[in-house]
Amino acid sequence: MYLLGFALSAIGVLWIVVNAFRESVLWGLGSLLIPFVALIFGLMNFSANKIPLLLCLIGAVLIAVGMPSMAELGAAANASAA
Image 1 (tube, rainbow, N blue to C red):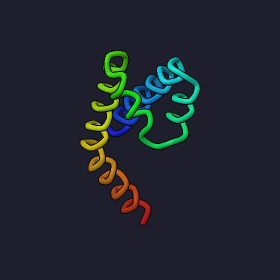
Image 2: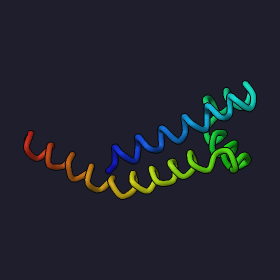
Image 3: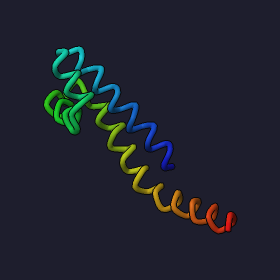
């Protein structure tokens, strides 16, 4: 679930960045280079970014839910290597 969440979040953020570049080059560059500018742009232009923001939110939830399973996977790999 962790990797699925990461993929959904990445798709959502890239979609917002594309919409930011459609608005202006400065918004696009800001979204790429400055943390949280893409989120601010998405919220300011909510009507055009409903689906990408939803993808980011679902992805964040899946990442949070999947983190413990990834930690268990890493612990099992370390135990078998030792």
